[in-house]
Image (cartoon, rainbow, N blue to C red; front, side, top):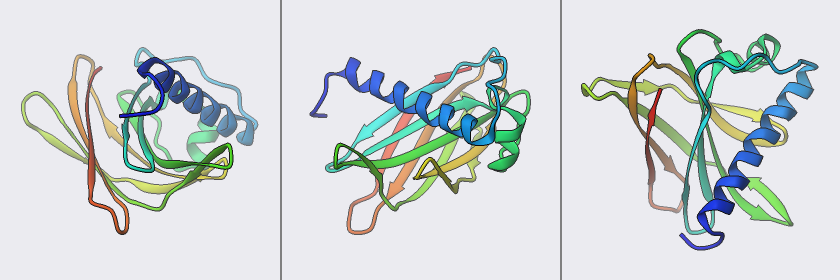
Length: 161
């Protein structure tokens, strides 16, 4: 995977997510809401020149104003999948254009297609979609990323709700 040791990559990802959410909240003039019982989760995949990062965020953790501004439905058991494709540039990061698709499959083999749409926030282009998760669900996610001139890449990860 190259680059930073695992702990530093994970910490940087959490910092990225915290900054993104803080920026979105500040842009809306909203205060953070009480956290739900579901916890955010992050997974990442290092490509040749880019990093694909997928975050799961319970929509109950988003303010109503932020959810409305970005067209995200809040609700019990509704989770936001936020996918970014970035590469380092000039001491920061830039978004890379990509076609992103995602599915979530439970332990019984029932698959949900997660409809993703492009979302611009904080100067970055991300891909966002919501899906349903029940308490005690274990879901396997497959996030496929297609970039022009590059072979497709798939980020796979599990999460227990």
